[in-house]
Length: 257
Length: 294
Image (cartoon, rainbow over all chains, first blue to last red; front, side, top):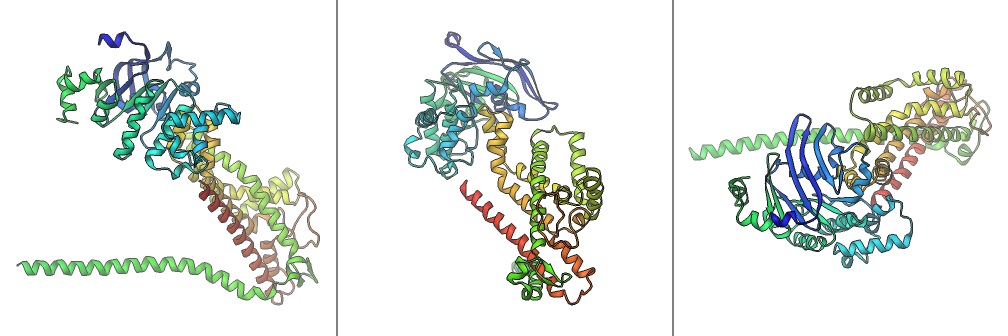
């Protein structure tokens, strides 16, 4: 734990309670996310890990009847403070979803989308950034000859890397990934995992996963959630080899969940 | 013991197979009746009316108390009226649908607006005609004109446009909206750049339905736009016009020589049907092109 403290914190959740209507989904969760590190959120279905992820860029605002208590600090700013520009916030905190969700546009336009909505019109800049983003997401070589064909013609794994490229194009600081490989085959999953390793040099990544091996492979820190509570968080190798709590070890060894 | 068990199994299989056959036969016949309905109506009108369709019929105004000549003013009138109705109804209808599905918070107000729109769809068309006469023609001083008729028809087609647009918007995957908002797009950017383009084929379907409805209606235009007879083509939106459905109505009920003009009536009906089907065809081709482009 001493190592954790010595590193720079990019996002910090403080005593976060979250409700869907009357139903409490998160109970007083406090957790720090470190810069240029991959933090995995694990736990059985319904444990609140995806809810927490979607609190980090206020995506839960879209769901009617939800309520938040507590703070989420992004740098020094509480993103739930009144007067926060949510649109601007989401530009800095990118998100990759469970199912690849490219727009029904061309490959190029998918990546250029974030630039265009931010008012960038210069064709040269857009082309440069699209190429850069596609290279960063390890997709460029596969799509450079079909940039102007529909993104829906790509394979599932390619679509997901396109979604990552789309998120990278607006140069976020944090990348939130909600089970990004759960809809993909093993080879495509491998590529996404390799990509995550490359991306953490530039971005801070929070990843929700159902796949324990995946958490072990890609993350630096792992936090285990159960029924809306953060049970244990530590460096990934510690969580998977000698967790402090029995509940955690029961889950990671497959005894429940 | 075992043998009898098997025989009872095969018995029930036979019964269920027979049931399957009967049920699907019923479904199939029902579907066939529906499609035959269209074929029979169009076929009947085509057989009766085809002989009247000549170049003169399509390009000349009626002559000799409308017992001879063509129906050009009616064709043009119907085109002006239905296009006018769509030009008014589509922007308002699409905007309302966007408001209802994308912006409005669920609650009492939203339910009330929906209820209003649904009831608007149930109002008999002659009531729209009387409303148009009272409101557009007299109160707003538009007179009996293309403008008044198009406004009245647009009120009639609005519910069609709104409900099909709403359906099209709801069919756009929520993940598109999340992806766009997640990149820092505003709600309006999301709607304008992602949601509306994806919903366009569906919106177009609504527009086609509305157009077909507007082109075929008689009651809403008989007090607001259409006249018995005018040999000249309209020169502005404040002119009155002849229109195909109203022309059929006039020839079939009010003419001096109803029997003699039967072929003209069927010819006019055929032109009206072809016009509507033609418009539909154009839109369907355009729609499938849009879908393929994705």
